[in-house]
Length: 402
Image (cartoon, rainbow, N blue to C red; front, side):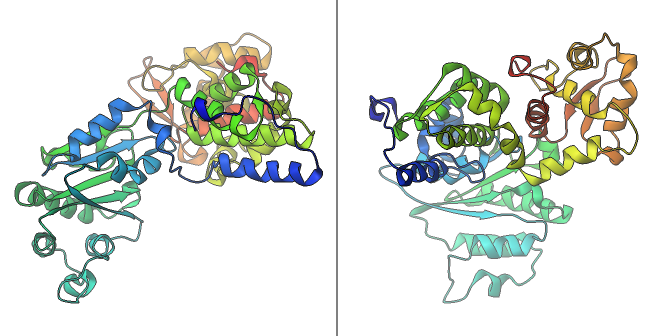
């Protein structure tokens, strides 16, 4: 919803039923646990849309879209058909989710389940094949007057190495011979190596597209475009703190705003203020992804007195480079504030080492050489969660979150 469609005044519910309706309606406007289907969410990402259009808008081209978990890749993939639609060309998009159980043949069983060859299905024709030529023969028979785009989402869940090799071979064959077919692969990864070990063998017609985290401006739009249509308001400071805590992840923006706005409704107000954000923090942490919460618990749990919780929070607050990596020296300032005393890297180096070991996740990944180490969170979504835990238990205040 754009600014032109926003109410010009607050709408205060007049009865208990209307307050309940507003509480429920907030859950329809803010959906932290589901991909969004709102094209306007991506209106600020014109460069990204152009990259995809360049990649698969032309016949014989393919794309890999990769990035951190939670940056909007699945939502973007859901809208690809809208982005790629041309007035004079028929396009059919087929999107399927990959899983750890998928093998080469079963992936194509799913991708081709909408099609028939003389009343026979792909599963009947392919069986348990490991021969890309058999797949190519079925794809050749698809309508030539129609662009068919196959989207494989959550590609990172495929663990079978042979399956990835066979898919790479299939992509090459499609690129060379089937210009009416395009493949889009979507997966969680920091680089292509994490999706395809032998990425040098991928066809040149396969464009690699990195999806970055959302900008603060984009996250601000999520809040400002959804709160006013409900007849509610939100202070600028509350919006800024929501965006800062979200760390580029739209799901967190939805989660935090939803809980803060519902807290305002519980106190019978349509004005969302910083107090609502503060008071809702416990509910926000409780409603976060279970896998993220479990990763946090594994990283900091111990039967002995320790500093794991404080050091992990300081890591989350540390200044990072353009690749979201931090140095040990960047941890000293936030940890000093948390502990209320001056510290050096020697104070917590052992904690950083432990965070990089299986016993605590690993929760951090270390790069570089000794004395020049840089670290990043293995689960990018964990960093803002750690900060929210710190806010919820009172270890830090919103002013500590940049």
